[in-house]
Length: 90
Image 1 (cartoon, rainbow, N blue to C red):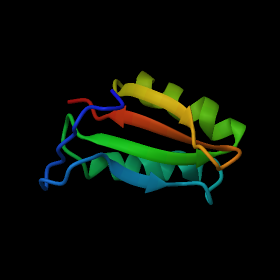
Image 2: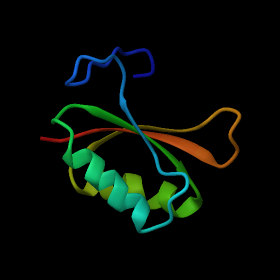
Image 3: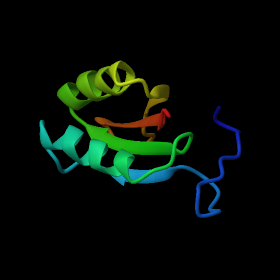
C-alpha cells in the first residue's frame, strides 16, 4: 500500500492527516473519531500518534468499528511516534 496513489474526496492526492501526538487518552480516540465522521467511506486517514496506549487501543477500536487498518509504522527520525493508516468503512 505504500506506493498506492490515494485520491481524497476533494481531489487531493494522499491520505488525510491527523496529528494526535499531543493528546492523551481518551482524547486521542475522540479526535480520531471526529475526523473520521467528516470523511467519506473509502477515504484514508493517516494518524500520527505517540505512546503505548494509543498505539495499542486506537487500531484495535477502529478495526472493531469496521474500519480497515492498512498499516502501523514507526515514523523515521521520530522516536516513539507511529503512523497509523486506516480506510473508513461504509
